[in-house]
Image 1 (cartoon, protein in one colour):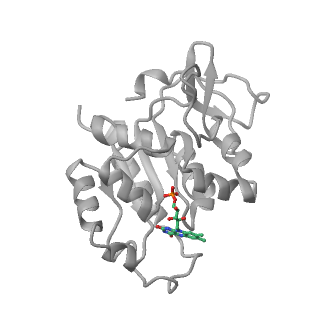
Image 2 (spheres, helix red, strand yellow):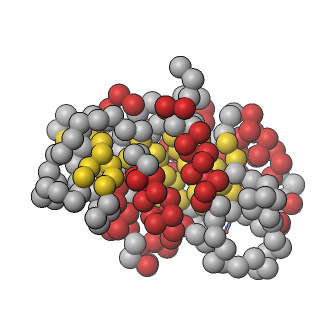
Length: 236
Ligand SMILES: Cc1cc2nc3c(=O)[nH]c(=O)nc-3n(C[C@H](O)[C@H](O)[C@H](O)COP(=O)(O)O)c2cc1C
């Protein structure tokens, strides 16, 4: 759990809003509520412990919305956050130039590749992971325990470790769900305690190319699941 390594606060990139930020210091990571309406950029302002959200984005429509629709609301709710992208998702967000904004929002580098063994971990250990949008490809790999990129490495470890809750929103279509291996992947994740945001009420499945690429992801259901898994709402 990351609860122990989050102690101080700093400036984040939320414009005039008040929100948390995470700073890397010589002593480790620091995070907490930052009042960015006062003080110079980079100033340490407060002392608090805040929950830290590991956000993992895959190469599916809607990944460009993780900043405004997920991270900004979670920062306002008092969370810190760090983003890890699959390699393909990173090329997409690179192409549209949105990675610097994610870095500015979270105060942390956006991860896309494994670190060198000699490098320090660039993010704190999360209190909760959310994988959204999760592609059919990444869900299948998570179900099998394949960890051939940084995003999968982190989430597979959390699933196996059992200490950090994992929430997954599969942004899939009817063909993905009809693949003969799909039910096994979903069953493996459920058995491991992963919270899956699925169902007709949150994400009705369309046939390929029949759903709009601009279809809104079920952000409120995703945020509700994160809050349910917040350290303050978990037993013990
Ligand atoms: C424009 C576009 C949209 C896509 N949308 C989805 C999607 O909504 N869901 C999905 O499972 N795959 C989608 N894909 C396919 C994935 O990008 C592809 O399977 C990729 O290998 C996934 O890599 P990742 O799981 O490592 O992010 C899309 C591909 C493109 C080019």
